[in-house]
Structures are given as C-alpha cells and as structure tokens.
Length: 132
Image (cartoon, rainbow, N blue to C red):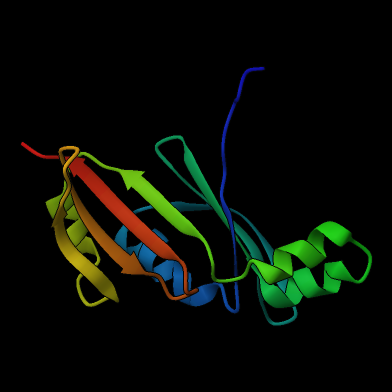
C-alpha cells in the first residue's frame, strides 16, 4: 500500500473564525468551500503540498440523518490535535501572536522547540522546529 496523502478533517461549530489562523496568518489557500445556510459548511485549505479540511458540526449533523459515518464525526468535534513540523518557529510565533497560545516555547528531549495553541474551533495545534 502506498499512502498518497493524509488530510485531517476537523469538525467545528464555525469555520469562519478558523480562517484567520490558517489563511490570514499562516498563508494557506482556500481551494474548495461548500456553503451551509448563510455560512460555510465545509472548507479545504492547502499550502506547500499540505491540506487541512474543516466541516461544521451542523452540516455533519445534517448528513448524519442518513450516514453512520457522519454520526461518528459529530462525536469527534473539537477533539483534534495537529502537529506541524516547520522550519522557522519564530515566524510562526509572530504569525499567531494574540491567539490562544497555551505553550509559547517548549523544548523537548527529542530536539524540538514547540509552540502549542488552541484554534478557534477548539482543536489543539502544535508547531515544532528542530533546535539549532
């Protein structure tokens, strides 16, 4: 088996507040979006060959009326953890200034410096760079 891509799908109450982090601050591009009512129900974001998707709990609940997979997704909302290996943690730190950073600078025993935050959807995101 060859894995071609691994893409997290994070289930959140609202997508729009999450876009400030990924699009405005970290430079991801919106490559697909699906409206749900007067807001977004789904969005796909990409940068440098990496991808992350968001879907709202409400749109998943609508799908759950006919799908057991969607019922399982509803239960996972706000419980995701992402770990991004980056080349410049100081650049990330500047980009996320003012957000809900819970560990601004952590050194690990395995040679990484990390910054951890909780994004507006309630998921935890860690950024790590090899210590120099």
